[in-house]
Amino acid sequence: MISNGEKGESMANTSGKLDKFIMKRLNQRLVFSIILRGGSVSRQQIAAQSRMSQMSVGRIIEELEKLGIVAEENGDEPDAGPGRRAKRLRVSSNVFLCVGVEMHRDGINVGIINLHGRVLRQIQHRKDLSACPPGEVITLIGTLIGRILSENADLSVEPFVGIACPGLIADGVIRFSSQLKWKNVEILPALQKQTGIRNIFIENEVKARAVAEDLFGAGRDYERSIVLSIGSGVGSAAVFCHELYRGKLNMAGEIGHICVSPGGNMCECGRRGCLQTYIADWAILREARTVREDITMQGLLEANANGEPWAINLMNRVLEYVSIAISILANTYAPDVIILCGRLIEEYSTLRDLILKNYKREISDYVLSSFDLKASDFDSDGTLVGAGTLAAYRLLDEIL
Image 1 (spheres, rainbow, N blue to C red):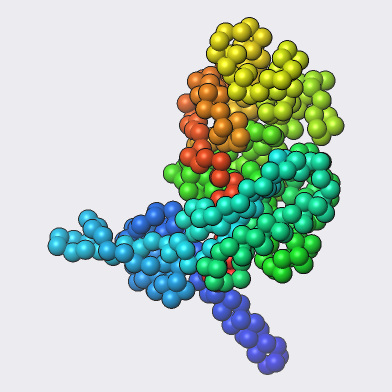
Image 2 (cartoon, rainbow, N blue to C red; image 1 turned 180 degrees about the vertical axis):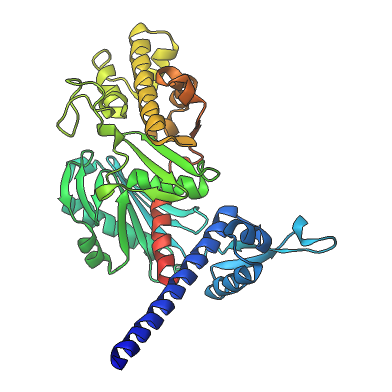
């Protein structure tokens, strides 16, 4: 009985120590997240947002300063009292730099990303990835990672690499990518072997973009945000209370493969009537080229602006299906904001403005008043920032 009691006491002590350790790490991450989102904040503001005492906040800040990821700056703070200058805090942006990799149908972008979500350097390589076997693409990614690392000696720690890829990504495996025409491709072991880098992670491209929008972009002031990406594919991602919603097997958000027209257009996935067969860039151009064989997206938009009936009809249909997509997201998730991004939004301002003007078509009045619709604050590098930011958070997991 005595031995059992001693064992029980020992287990209780161990459990108590573990609970304290976990709580300490969670509080460190909370404080770091508040500073990162705020850009420049005071201890008083951190205490108010975290609901911790200023003493506890001060202790955590001291630990973060020792790690080199948070630094003080002088600035006026009204709450500090008359005649006093409160010290404000911000994330030390270039202490830890990570590598972001964006894969898309037409090529690969690789960049160095800092903790403020800025792309410091970037390499762009154009190639039709859907026409390449996975092994060739993996080798190319490894080569580009090696090249950008060799050009950036300021990466003082072992690099962390985040990869954003279109398709269903679960447990580090590309389960299915209709854009790349890949199934069950595991790229991480080969990349780790080629580059000698242990810390490489892969995520769905729209989910990576949602992280960037939540931290640094159009979603940063909202608790519930949805990203709708329209480009060579169509996808969405949800962030609730600054946490990415993944769903089972990381499958949440695959709106592009919702059937909106049974028996309709053939999709890359092998089914008919998927949403992306009406609003993805290739689908729009496929339809436009039945009228004008060599037309580009810009040419289509100009034909629409010039009042050509066929172009007006096609663009009206595109806008109708984009409105349906927004309606699905608004009714399903009840977000505070829906953020538009993707190649068609970023490269064609005319189309972006048409969507912002006409998105209400298929949405009920009572739903319209419940959310904001915004275009992304990023240019074309938002997904790359998301990939690098995910890698940065994995790095922080190692030290916090």
